[in-house]
Image (tube, rainbow, N blue to C red; front, top):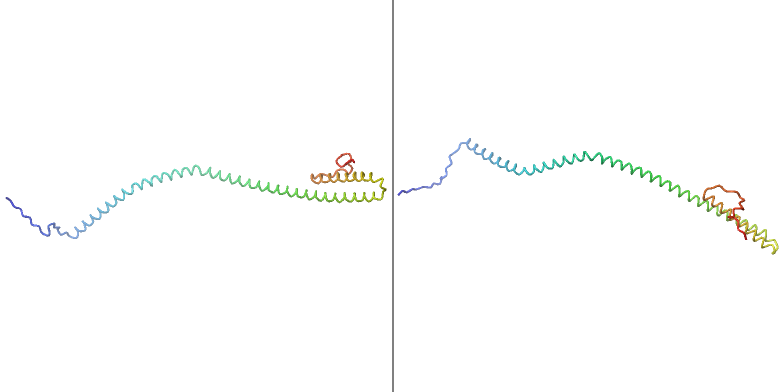
Length: 189
């Protein structure tokens, strides 16, 4: 039988001694393999990112097309709305001024009517007092016609006051002083 004896020495795997050029070649080969593996891993990892960037670019293109189509009409609508708002503001300003003028004229009419009423009241009081003083010296028998005359004159003064107030309110011109036929300023007793 055969016997095989294998001796193991500490230098079982012996590496031949390489020259400096050989060592540089192995180092360069190792670096290039490592760089190639890293580049392939980078490309594999970047493929989904590149697809996502492609989808984003397509979406951006569609958005730009839509904006190019819609933006001019939208801006025209906004410009038109701005002009309408400006016109509305001017109309509201004019309306506000007209309302203010109307209120001022109404206040003036009320003040004129109030002054007219005071003036007519004092005139009626003066006429009544003068009538009463005239008739105070008459005998008692003639008092009843005096009261009827005073009522007639007071009625006439009230009628004139009513006409004056109405003319002041309606800004009309004063009518004739002797409208005894109208029936408004005359009270029969």
